[in-house]
Amino acid sequence: MVSFVIATNRLQRAVIIALTAFILIAFTACGTPASTVGMAAHAAAVPLTAPTTPPILLFIGTGTSPSDVSAVEAILSTNKLTYATATSSQLDGMTETQLKAYKLLIVPGGNSITIGDNLTSTATTNVHNAVVNDGLNYLGICAGGFFGGYSIYNGLNLTSGTWFNFYEDYNDGIHKNAVQISSPSSGTLDQYWQDGPEFSGWGSIVGKYPDGTPAIVEGSSGKGWVILSGVHPEAPASWRIGMNFTTSVAVDNAYAGTLVLAALDRTSLPHY
Image (cartoon, rainbow, N blue to C red):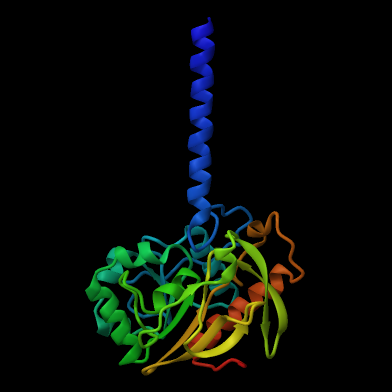
């Protein structure tokens, strides 16, 4: 009986440790929690093989957060924007000519190192050239912002060699937070942040973190228009659990739509 109790206790501890490790993994990548509870419904993507190319290509490959993909899809649906999706292998197989048929490429949150390491250098070169030479626009959110800059991990380098570091909360041991983002036009909005970058050294500053570093930037990359966001305005209510926001989900999500439309239409947002 004693040996049975000891074995049972060991099993319980093993299960607890395994679950704890899983939770830590799910919440440490730049991007979003794995939960999709409360996620808004969205329209289905147009197949890559469709006869008519939609205006937007949304990357959903290895390293992206499935819940952030869903959050971005909800914003696209709300704004009645049609889009196709591409996995890592599908993006690997696309030529520069195929990419430039789209107006906008969106790369959402997740893990920028994993995103880059699971694409070929040919794929990232084709995307880079489609933006710089052919005028494909780019919106990078959190990990997509890191990935849009220079990186030794097969980044797109749409920023002429500028690489980006984490916002200071990361160095303080904070990995997700409600962060006040200030802008010249919208005042201050609380935005969901999780291990996101700050964009010192590139572009015009659309939004600032509380320490004054760039949270959202925009600028030309050759012929393409690029917007990079270190925060998640697309975040649904389910991501806010345990945090205090003064800005409503609806207002933040509307701002996410503003970023998408500005990237799509090559619109310069008010900036500092």
